[in-house]
Image (cartoon, rainbow, N blue to C red; front, top):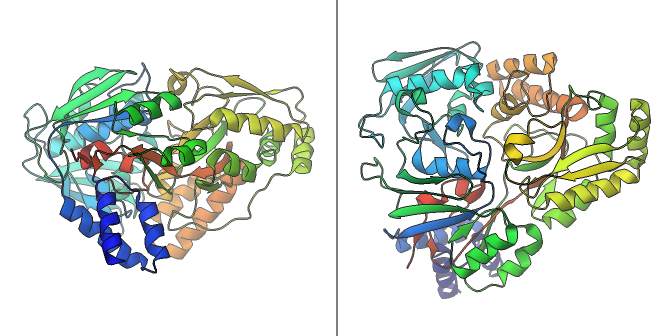
Length: 527
């Protein structure tokens, strides 16, 4: 048994067997999860990183409108590329814990209203300039400016003042916030020279790779930055992202060896992919969720009875079964699930055509409801829209589906059209998720949810240091979003990626797809 597990654990380290399959085999042999994970860690250390080569990813989620400005990142490819060339003050590891990055350490005043981050010395930008506290300050100022349209604007609203004290950057908050360090992991808050104020699209950062190719929507790449400050990532000499929005083409590229890893494997083909020689499915549960978003301030969705009708018209169990194929769980019209430490169970909303019909009639709306979707919204989004159309019809609600092109979906449809399909990868904390997408003044408030009571509770929860009281506030906020908001959350998804036989170093990370966005930096080519 020991020899068999050693053999299998080495295959995991080489990327030839998934962690999930290994743990399943270990459990069948009566081996505890603790011991099995220990074997995996030992195998990974023994295998060790291999340096050199060109590591390639084939990805859905790129378009010709993508920007290199971190403030504007909206979809997978710019986010993923950004993780390779830029860094934040802190990084959240696969266990959900904060780790130092460009800040060596941090601490707070007793009331959690003043936070001090000690900035690391000796870190170089790709242009040769040393990163300083002034660069950090300028970065935070830019993302706090409403004119920047930064996706981080919502979480920056609670900051009253930012100053420099020697090698420290000091944040003074309007109200106490025990989660502030977690907010600094927001992927928009990449530290740039002078905060990116001079040229935010220049892609000059402190990450392991320096951008050398930027063909938006087609191909992007970088080469190892010789002056990179750490040695636990950046093993390949070069990295490349090929934008392949078509799911079939993406899997063909992986199978043929054109790329070494891909994102967004459709659950319906996972069983088939598992049978392909050398291909490993890499899936992990987390905070990601697929959503249908309605603008609460736009007719006819400004009527809460219509919104409730649309929520009761979703057969969530059917969607999880037919769209996710078991790689996820049922949603409950909030962005929060049990992955969050302060999560509280609420009564599960279920498919109820009678209640849907009641609220639909009460809303006074007549005629069809236009729903926009696209292949890039999430894997299976077109099929999910058709299932929605069928279940809503049982309540007498006509859903008209408009299939939008993938290129430009995130710039022309999401956050602009009043009813559409989308996805969220989740955020490290409930405060960050709510602040980014549900706070009234957040630029990414994609449901146009403006609720003064909710905003007040959000600020109150930030300042509440008693965990039980804070948990109760979040529970009440979740109830408001569920019953009054414009988000329909049918399901929480696993992140499902796949790797080829040459990929080593893959480790599950539920923070986001592709190892939390770090797969090209933390993996290596075994041959």
